[in-house]
Length: 440
Image (cartoon, rainbow, N blue to C red):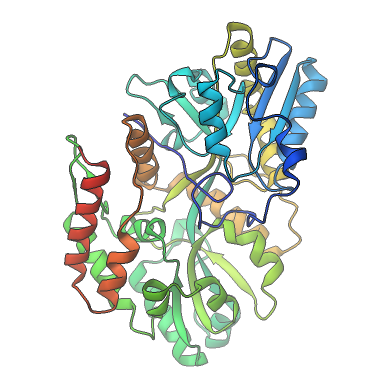
């Protein structure tokens, strides 16, 4: 049983999902590639020389550079860090496997059946008690082998226009131990909208991930497979989705986001929206871009479940190219996930850690950004295990040779919001799409 899989982000995979650092065009392909297209000299290292592939924007690789330099200094083992442009990264991994020229270590966007049988078992790292790695976010195969450990995690979350709340005199929670329900939140946001003459109470990313998080918090499982692989939805999911569609009334929420792709982040940043349901990857951007008002991250609603949709920003794997290199790769990854080293990685790269209790000190000047990361770090240990279900399912699909090429959630719910079909009919069509693509 796979416990958790891989979040495909724009940094490492799925297009259109925002990350901790928004992905710009990756520069100077020639300097980054460094013969990463294969060839025996670039892989299959030795006990004293390893190759480590990543794919990230300039700046967010700072943590990797720091840890590689520190490891080389302390151990004498050379680790060649190769930062490959996002476009084509998965193809390069695939081709490298076919050419028997995989790197020794990599941060991967998703598992690939062509090389998953060459992965080193990372159980000794994942199971080490002092590492405090959240087991909900590991990728395991049916035998219990740990295939990958997240480099970092991301989570859905709520942002509010703090200035509007204060102007309206409406309170909001600040601790995940004492959070609000969705009913309480909508009531408060509507009150703020009415008192301040804001345009909308809430904008909500047009994202299946954000919808899943809300459904989980309302006690549903969203589109969930049984032991036979057949998908269905439960009563709590139907109730939550009907509630969500009802919010899209051009007062509580604008219909245009889910029906025609309007930008919910831009709406929130305009200062005319009370709250925004998105995620942690917005924090660094808001620290720099939001100037018109004070903003804050607030605890995710629980009705009654404390949950989110938590994903891996990237997943770290080791490849068994040869005995010496595999042993050296395992030692490097063991070093990387030791709490003091992993904390330094998270601080330098702006990562939300998969290890609990680290309290990383981030270099943000914005007090709101610092408070936001503190809140996420406090919240993740409280989330119900269902928060990692979808990524676990994605990994299982990959290992079974399947993938959800197109999630029908956005299209079908857009039709429901437009009044073209009922929310229940939308869910019926979404379930059919899942069963067709990844069922069984």
